[in-house]
Length: 434
Image 1: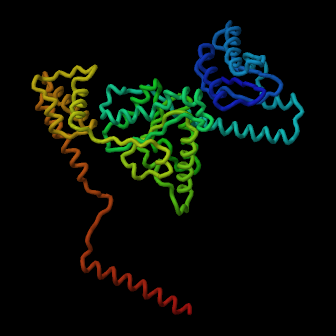
Image 2 (image 1 turned 180 degrees about the horizontal axis):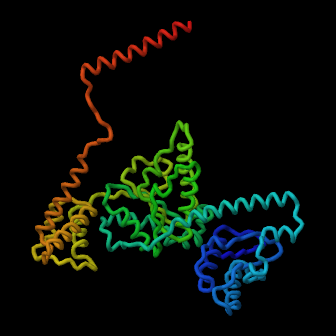
Image 3 (image 1 turned 90 degrees about the vertical axis):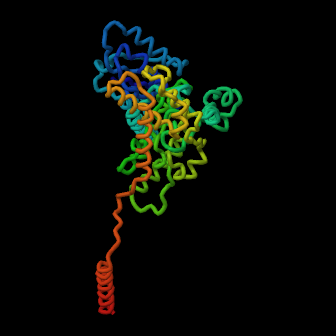
């Protein structure tokens, strides 16, 4: 499926994106699903012209299709009468809009060179659009009612994302857009694992009525030189296309200090990727959230552009709310015995949200396997103890990637002898050269 749209002069990239989206959405019922990149624009100085190359799935809808196309283009080009051709591939199977325009008008060589540059630019933009199809936003799974955070932290988050909610008033009515073109917020969520960073990102998307596009450093990193920056730009483009909150998890590798003493291509590629990220942050229209456990690794150039919000381990009151949410929250039907004491669990175990979730899950599974009728306090405590022991083991685990072994005196003597032999050989060679 191809739709070629010839326009007298090129509008903004945002206008082209909107036209693409509206065509794919409003023509879907006539032609079926087709990607936005199948809507291709070209400069046609003579007229506004639309060529729909393929026929519709069902006959008899040409009039309705024509009206849909007119309504879309007239919204952006109200003064131009559109020439519309349906099923044009049947009439002209080798149609090439760029060649057709060249044949219709006598264009100077300089103008042709300019056109070629423009087409090259369009081709590059097409590459980014094509790459962006690898990423798609999803509906958020959590709301702020489900995320247990201190009130001060919730206030910080709400203030940080309110830019989007008051964009029209502040940036358009008050004219702030003349000095700050894009109303965007870039947030950095940092703190220990399991403290609610990912859930809070999804809650923000839900609050704004947007989808969320999740990505990690692994989605961007590439061993091929030059691909990293392209993937960065493609991810940001996908977030703009879907009007989504962009959430980049495990971002310490992505935002870490740019490399000095660059000696190979892969190091250059990493620096290029991080430079491209800075550009995308400046141009992005929306909310982007970075999450990390290691904010100290961030480059200062990134830190100065981010609103930094620290997530800490919950206090007793917050732990009680999290235990309650996981045991008696909305939609849950866990058969709890009468002796379950949430206050004791919150007091006894200084857990983060993830550890509480794992403990509840383990207790439910153990109860179901044992075919017990109720989840008891004893079972919850045993599961919590198991979670605690596992966490302590992980924290105290030794690094076995490097084996440290003390050399014996005999081994030291052999090593010294070998080193001295190398030194003597080098001196002999130097003496012979002289």
